[in-house]
Length: 68
Image (cartoon, rainbow, N blue to C red; front, side, top):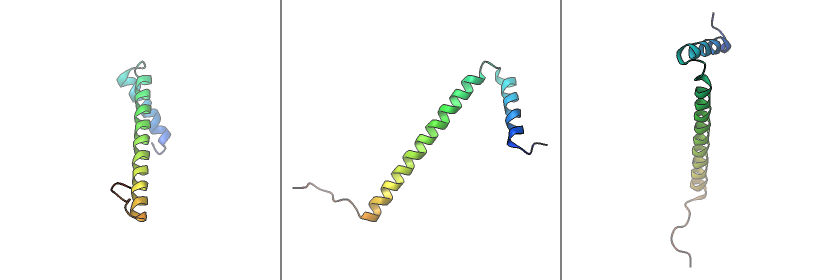
């Protein structure tokens, strides 16, 4: 009966309207969009850190200490 993701999406939207009212749906969508954006930013930052760490481990440690 509910084989498609579209079916579940319709059910979720109807349930959201019933529970939160139609005036709260845009606020919820905005909050969800911001959360997804922050999650993606965090994931990209972690991936960059991992790549930088891998690059330093393959090239050897950076020289530490003052350069004269």
